[in-house]
Length: 109
Ligand code: 2BA
Image (cartoon, rainbow, N blue to C red; front, side):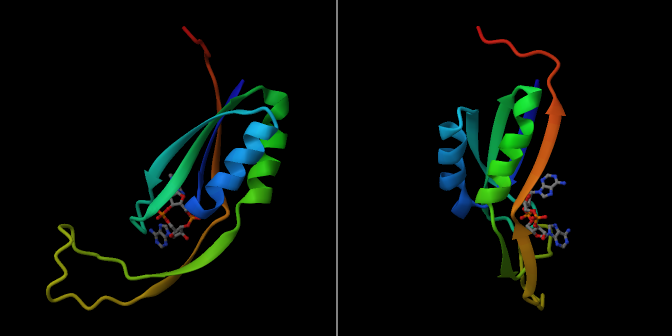
C-alpha cells in the first residue's frame, strides 16, 4: 500500500477531489499554507493499493495546472517591513507537488 501526499492549488482542489472520489479513491483533504508564498493551498492524502498509484497520479496531472504568480516576498523574520525595499517576483506554482510513500501498516479501528 502507498500513501500519496500531494500539494495542489486551491483553484484545482474541487475538480481533483471530485475526480478522485468518482474513481473510487479514499481521500482526505487538508487546508495548507505554502512556506514561500504564505498563501493557501490544498494537501490531499490518498491511501491506495500499489497498482492504483499510476491512476491516481494521472488524475492529479489531468486536474492540476501550473500558473505564474507575482508575489512580493516579505524577507524580515518578524514581518516588519519598515525600511525594506520589496521587489515583486514572478514564480511558477504547481501543477502539483507529489510525494509517494510506502505504508508500513494501515489500520482502521
Ligand atoms: P510555496 O512554498 O508557497 O511555493 C510556491 C512556489 O514558489 C513554488 O511552486 C516555487 O515555484 C516557488 N518557490 C518556493 N520556494 C522557493 C524559494 N525558496 N525560492 C524561490 N522560489 C520558491 P511549487 O514548487 O510548485 O510548490 C507549490 C507548493 O507545494 C509550495 O508552496 C509548498 O506548499 C509545496 N511544496 C513544494 N515543494 C515542497 C517540498 N519539497 N516539501 C514540502 N512542500 C513542498
